Length: 246
Image (cartoon, rainbow, N blue to C red; front, top):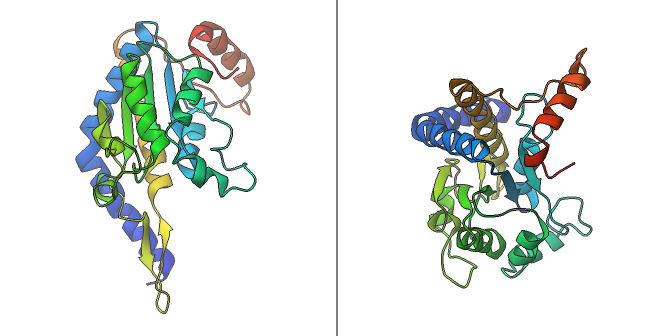
């Protein structure tokens, strides 16, 4: 079997494991998300460096939730130059306070934090401080990976230990999963694919929950379909009080 075939085989196994172990957690999060929106709260997604890709996956995309707000702070996104600065900054716990103070997030809101290792200062401090402010926190993380590493936060806690809810991306220690003959290091990580599956299944479950409650689901239509721009403009107007990215 080719390495492509091996990688796809692992992905199939991981997706099956994700479904079996996390389906109920994703459904529970969808209920919490709709509760938040229905009560007037806002929904935010955050991650550092590659983990932040999920914050971008969650917002302003076809079939995605209009009310998904990304937190994309300076120095923690992959357009940072040099990009190695992101690895330095994500370990500085105190930066979490600056991030939270820079966005309109408040008591009653929902914050989803993605961190695969769950050990660095910023995501852990974000969760701790957000909970102090009355914000409901959700970790998307690899519990296996995180449990095998010491925390870099002064509390000694990892992300899965400080959030209200945890969704396990069923990732391996170090994230990469393939060993290539003749090479000691592993390659082919799974966290972005697992994370995107979590985010988009959360969207689907949320839409079903909105409909169950008789609420018009806040979902984007493709701007490349006829009528897409007009439909999306109506969504923007309807949910403008829950949107912070415009």
